[in-house]
Length: 438
Image 1 (cartoon, rainbow, N blue to C red):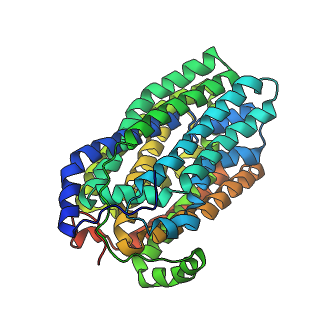
Image 2: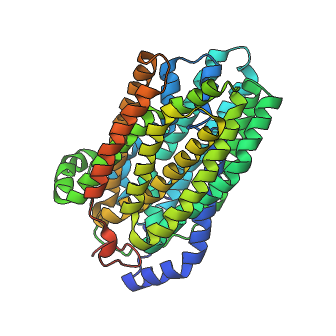
Image 3: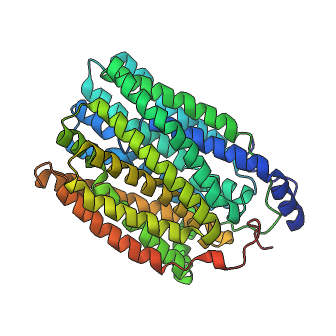
């Protein structure tokens, strides 16, 4: 597919009419793609399962700390290097599909390596478990902003929160069964054989999700003068863009500080298993509790986001993050940890709905890909610093969760403050779609 060719231009009215015409189909396709992708990734869950897996393979503490963020680092890292190029395109779907294939192949390669040599080489297995999400994220990160633009041009602002929520609800509904399946797989096939099977299932489900995504009906933007910046020119003008958009700057600060949750996140499941005296397979039950909470969080966030916008959904989710951080050191019983993970799931997915909605609305259309790329890029050092700080605090605190939890709590307080400073765009006049000015 030619990723740079310009399709026949349409007028603004024709563009909006085509978007409305294709909305039911695109809404369904985007929801199925996201639901299947998210469900597949749960088999190698970065938040609940992979830190436990790396620990069981003898991985060092710093690698355990990095597990929840490696996929995020990969997907957010490259976007700033390519946003200026994708911003020139009127069609974004073809290039996203090409890199999505590479994004999925990483898990197939990982499964093959784990099947063939993981049992005899535990350190190799730990490296593969870590590199799979990183490699997959890097492949997807090249076209992250182009994918966001596909969503923005096919789904009107007033329907995006419910779309994100529906994607996540499909993921979390499947996740209840995934948690049980993961426990059964790891009990029947302990060690690297079980881990290999989990990676293979992830690859299969992500491939099915891509088959759905390929059916999106993308309407090219109306013909308009598009910026033609080099990478250097685009980077030089970014400070001026943010200086003119104060609310985007506040959002950027909130996006950086919400990464503080990664100070404690890698250690929660290890802390739970240690406190309760359970085996690694118990992480499957924690994943199920996480998914049940996530369903509730998605329903609330989707409903509220479509009506009042993403700002308040973000703020509420980050307050729940704060509660999780404060409660984690005090939890001692099985039911407390189930409740803790349910709250974590509600906050995680609620924040995802709110942030995905808000950042598409607050960024001006003409430079949206550049704004989004900066937001993604700022998250990378934020979560890296949080993960490494969490590793140091975990070790300095005698492998107890209290120090990482309270530092994460402090970061959440800052995050909530910055989030509340953002001016909610939902009160402003909304177009049914995002059409560039001519």
